[in-house]
Length: 191
Picture 1: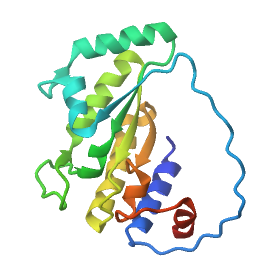
Picture 2 (picture 1 turned 120 degrees about the vertical axis):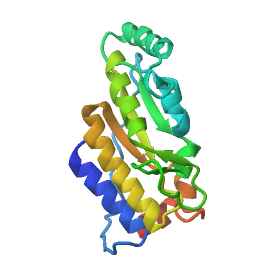
Picture 3 (picture 1 turned 90 degrees about the horizontal axis):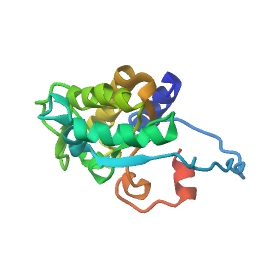
Picture 4 (picture 1 turned 45 degrees about the vertical axis):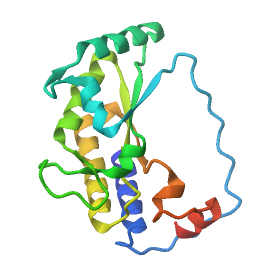
Protein backbone atom coordinates (compact mmCIF):
# COMPACT_ATOMS: atom_id res chain seq x y z
CA UNK A 1 0.00 0.00 0.00
CA UNK A 2 1.35 3.41 -0.85
CA UNK A 3 2.01 6.04 1.76
CA UNK A 4 -0.41 8.29 -0.12
CA UNK A 5 -3.25 5.84 0.61
CA UNK A 6 -2.38 5.82 4.30
CA UNK A 7 -2.31 9.61 4.40
CA UNK A 8 -5.64 9.72 2.58
CA UNK A 9 -7.15 7.18 4.98
CA UNK A 10 -5.79 9.13 7.94
CA UNK A 11 -7.30 12.32 6.53
CA UNK A 12 -10.69 10.69 5.93
CA UNK A 13 -10.69 9.16 9.42
CA UNK A 14 -9.89 12.53 10.98
CA UNK A 15 -12.67 14.14 8.95
CA UNK A 16 -15.16 11.47 10.00
CA UNK A 17 -14.34 12.22 13.64
CA UNK A 18 -14.95 15.92 13.08
CA UNK A 19 -11.30 16.85 13.60
CA UNK A 20 -10.92 18.34 10.12
CA UNK A 21 -13.53 20.07 7.98
CA UNK A 22 -13.38 19.99 4.19
CA UNK A 23 -15.51 20.37 1.07
CA UNK A 24 -15.58 17.84 -1.76
CA UNK A 25 -17.36 18.07 -5.10
CA UNK A 26 -18.63 14.69 -6.33
CA UNK A 27 -19.45 14.13 -9.98
CA UNK A 28 -22.41 11.82 -10.50
CA UNK A 29 -23.00 9.35 -11.86
CA UNK A 30 -19.79 7.74 -10.74
CA UNK A 31 -18.10 5.55 -13.36
CA UNK A 32 -18.86 1.85 -13.12
CA UNK A 33 -16.09 0.00 -11.32
CA UNK A 34 -14.01 -2.43 -13.29
CA UNK A 35 -15.20 -5.96 -12.63
CA UNK A 36 -12.46 -8.04 -11.11
CA UNK A 37 -12.45 -11.74 -10.52
CA UNK A 38 -11.04 -13.78 -7.70
CA UNK A 39 -8.16 -15.91 -8.97
CA UNK A 40 -8.76 -19.64 -8.73
CA UNK A 41 -5.71 -20.01 -6.49
CA UNK A 42 -6.72 -17.31 -3.97
CA UNK A 43 -6.92 -18.38 -0.33
CA UNK A 44 -7.86 -15.98 2.43
CA UNK A 45 -8.49 -16.30 6.15
CA UNK A 46 -10.16 -13.83 8.45
CA UNK A 47 -8.96 -13.63 12.03
CA UNK A 48 -10.52 -11.54 14.75
CA UNK A 49 -8.03 -8.95 16.02
CA UNK A 50 -7.39 -10.44 19.50
CA UNK A 51 -6.80 -13.93 18.09
CA UNK A 52 -4.36 -13.12 15.27
CA UNK A 53 -1.33 -13.22 17.57
CA UNK A 54 -2.58 -16.46 19.14
CA UNK A 55 -2.93 -18.10 15.72
CA UNK A 56 0.40 -16.90 14.34
CA UNK A 57 2.59 -17.02 17.45
CA UNK A 58 2.89 -19.52 20.25
CA UNK A 59 2.97 -17.92 23.71
CA UNK A 60 3.19 -14.49 22.01
CA UNK A 61 6.90 -15.05 21.36
CA UNK A 62 7.54 -17.54 18.56
CA UNK A 63 6.08 -18.88 15.36
CA UNK A 64 3.16 -21.31 15.72
CA UNK A 65 4.56 -23.83 13.25
CA UNK A 66 1.45 -26.01 12.73
CA UNK A 67 -0.48 -22.97 11.45
CA UNK A 68 2.46 -21.79 9.32
CA UNK A 69 2.88 -25.27 7.82
CA UNK A 70 -0.82 -25.26 6.86
CA UNK A 71 -0.34 -21.89 5.14
CA UNK A 72 2.82 -23.15 3.41
CA UNK A 73 0.92 -26.20 2.18
CA UNK A 74 -1.85 -24.01 0.74
CA UNK A 75 0.72 -21.71 -0.84
CA UNK A 76 2.42 -24.66 -2.52
CA UNK A 77 -0.71 -25.18 -4.66
CA UNK A 78 -0.56 -21.69 -6.13
CA UNK A 79 3.19 -21.64 -6.62
CA UNK A 80 3.22 -17.89 -6.05
CA UNK A 81 1.15 -15.87 -3.63
CA UNK A 82 0.46 -17.34 -0.23
CA UNK A 83 -2.78 -16.98 1.72
CA UNK A 84 -4.07 -13.56 2.65
CA UNK A 85 -4.80 -13.02 6.34
CA UNK A 86 -7.50 -10.48 7.13
CA UNK A 87 -7.11 -9.21 10.69
CA UNK A 88 -10.40 -7.53 11.50
CA UNK A 89 -14.01 -8.52 11.89
CA UNK A 90 -16.31 -7.26 14.63
CA UNK A 91 -13.37 -7.05 17.02
CA UNK A 92 -11.70 -4.39 14.85
CA UNK A 93 -14.35 -1.94 16.00
CA UNK A 94 -13.61 -2.67 19.67
CA UNK A 95 -9.81 -2.74 19.41
CA UNK A 96 -7.46 0.19 19.78
CA UNK A 97 -3.83 0.86 18.87
CA UNK A 98 -1.99 1.30 22.18
CA UNK A 99 1.71 0.96 21.37
CA UNK A 100 2.82 1.13 25.01
CA UNK A 101 0.38 -1.66 25.88
CA UNK A 102 -0.83 -0.03 29.08
CA UNK A 103 -2.65 3.22 28.30
CA UNK A 104 -6.36 3.33 29.03
CA UNK A 105 -8.71 2.24 26.27
CA UNK A 106 -11.55 4.41 25.03
CA UNK A 107 -15.02 3.47 26.23
CA UNK A 108 -16.36 0.21 24.73
CA UNK A 109 -12.95 -0.90 23.44
CA UNK A 110 -11.73 -4.22 24.79
CA UNK A 111 -8.40 -5.09 23.12
CA UNK A 112 -5.07 -3.25 23.06
CA UNK A 113 -3.29 -3.61 19.71
CA UNK A 114 0.47 -3.29 20.27
CA UNK A 115 3.74 -3.74 18.42
CA UNK A 116 3.48 -7.45 19.31
CA UNK A 117 0.46 -7.77 16.98
CA UNK A 118 2.40 -6.24 14.08
CA UNK A 119 5.53 -8.27 14.90
CA UNK A 120 3.51 -11.49 14.70
CA UNK A 121 2.36 -10.61 11.18
CA UNK A 122 5.75 -9.28 10.12
CA UNK A 123 7.63 -12.41 11.15
CA UNK A 124 5.05 -14.98 10.03
CA UNK A 125 3.65 -13.77 6.68
CA UNK A 126 6.98 -14.09 4.80
CA UNK A 127 7.22 -17.74 5.83
CA UNK A 128 4.38 -18.58 3.42
CA UNK A 129 4.60 -15.61 1.03
CA UNK A 130 1.45 -14.22 2.62
CA UNK A 131 -0.13 -10.81 2.80
CA UNK A 132 -2.63 -9.16 5.09
CA UNK A 133 -5.57 -6.82 5.20
CA UNK A 134 -5.74 -4.86 8.42
CA UNK A 135 -9.01 -3.67 9.95
CA UNK A 136 -9.10 -0.36 11.81
CA UNK A 137 -11.54 0.80 14.46
CA UNK A 138 -14.00 3.24 12.92
CA UNK A 139 -17.08 2.65 15.05
CA UNK A 140 -16.24 4.88 17.99
CA UNK A 141 -15.24 7.90 15.87
CA UNK A 142 -13.96 9.84 18.85
CA UNK A 143 -10.81 11.95 18.62
CA UNK A 144 -8.95 9.33 20.72
CA UNK A 145 -9.97 6.31 18.64
CA UNK A 146 -9.58 8.17 15.33
CA UNK A 147 -6.06 9.24 16.26
CA UNK A 148 -5.28 5.69 17.43
CA UNK A 149 -6.58 4.23 14.13
CA UNK A 150 -4.50 6.66 12.09
CA UNK A 151 -1.41 5.82 14.15
CA UNK A 152 -2.22 2.11 13.78
CA UNK A 153 -2.30 2.44 9.98
CA UNK A 154 0.96 4.41 9.92
CA UNK A 155 2.67 1.88 12.22
CA UNK A 156 1.37 -1.01 10.08
CA UNK A 157 2.79 0.51 6.88
CA UNK A 158 6.13 1.12 8.60
CA UNK A 159 6.26 -2.40 10.08
CA UNK A 160 4.69 -4.52 7.35
CA UNK A 161 5.59 -2.65 4.16
CA UNK A 162 4.67 -4.77 1.13
CA UNK A 163 3.08 -7.46 3.31
CA UNK A 164 0.19 -5.06 3.94
CA UNK A 165 -2.20 -5.39 1.02
CA UNK A 166 -4.94 -3.09 2.25
CA UNK A 167 -6.45 -1.33 5.25
CA UNK A 168 -10.16 -1.56 6.07
CA UNK A 169 -11.65 1.41 7.87
CA UNK A 170 -14.29 -0.18 10.08
CA UNK A 171 -15.86 -3.59 9.86
CA UNK A 172 -19.43 -2.77 8.89
CA UNK A 173 -19.77 0.65 7.24
CA UNK A 174 -23.40 1.15 8.20
CA UNK A 175 -22.41 0.81 11.86
CA UNK A 176 -19.27 2.94 11.70
CA UNK A 177 -20.70 6.41 11.33
CA UNK A 178 -21.85 7.04 14.85
CA UNK A 179 -23.94 3.87 14.91
CA UNK A 180 -26.65 5.01 12.54
CA UNK A 181 -27.84 3.49 9.30
CA UNK A 182 -26.30 5.36 6.37
CA UNK A 183 -27.25 5.03 2.71
CA UNK A 184 -24.62 5.37 -0.01
CA UNK A 185 -26.09 8.77 -0.91
CA UNK A 186 -25.79 9.91 2.72
CA UNK A 187 -22.24 8.62 2.85
CA UNK A 188 -21.31 10.46 -0.36
CA UNK A 189 -22.86 13.63 1.07
CA UNK A 190 -20.71 13.31 4.22
CA UNK A 191 -17.50 12.76 2.28
